[in-house]
Image 1 (cartoon, rainbow, N blue to C red):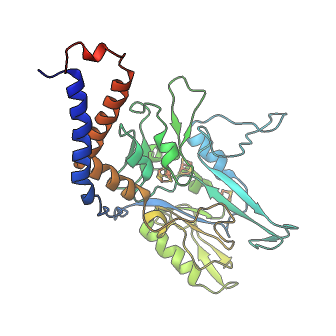
Image 2 (cartoon, rainbow, N blue to C red):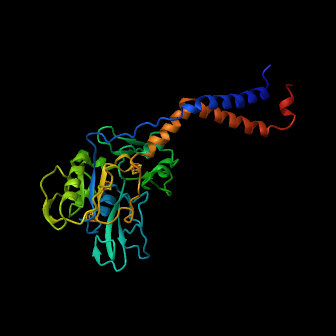
Image 3 (cartoon, rainbow, N blue to C red):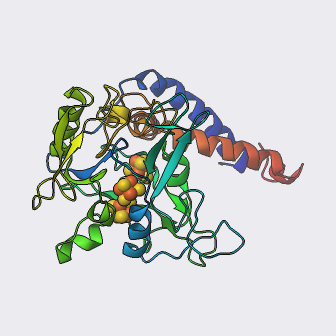
Length: 325
Ligand code: SF4
Ligand code: SF4
Ligand code: SF4
């Protein structure tokens, strides 16, 4: 007769045997997913940014987000960081006397903080209920509040610290940039790019934006060139501007497997708040581990074994023996 004790023993032994049998196969990582060919995104050029924050205000308006105050007078929107209600922020780097724009020494520089729309987003990978999804055509990473269970795995998974939880929301929502996908049906595009007076934030296909970014970094600092504004494939709103002292690096071209939002800067990216990341997404690594474990049934059996151990330990002495060995 199968007693509870025998069952528990069997679970523990089975878990150990199965884990030992399948563990050696836990090896080959899946490839990091690439951006879809029609991927949409933004190019943020910090050398063109004047810190006017029109993009921050436009983002608030486009997403119907309330103002957030960090001053006692509460006169206007002054968020100190992105939040569940602030999806876009312009941050400032300062050094020494802060005299010269885009200089690391005694200078200052701006940097936009918003979702990077990763090619292989770990927020999507981490979400257990597919509330975070990546559009197969545009690559835009969207969020479905109706599907969200408020677990905040996406918050923990994002290497850029982007998804933020609306702690005061009774329904527990996440807030983050969705590249203004709700505005395209009316012929609009990202509000931040639409209002940017200098073209520092430019909207379009990531492949076009990457080509434009590479064109810029190849130019000699101080020469004159045309800078598009708004959307890269839209009506000509370009103007003549002087080329900045670009780093020879398009941030997002390869970081984390590539992102659909790209950035240019004259000041070291880490100093302006962009993390140094490997050329592959951790979504690929974590999914490989998960799929290997679940694929080999190690995890369920091991978990069952562990649960069985806890249950066995908690059984009152003598209770388990009622049915005999
Ligand atoms: S609107 Fe353009 S120039 Fe103004 S802060 Fe935003 S990115 Fe910079
Ligand atoms: S930046 Fe963060 S929130 Fe945005 S797609 Fe990448 S992992 Fe997701
Ligand atoms: S694309 Fe839209 S939601 Fe995203 S930062 Fe720009 S304005 Fe905000």
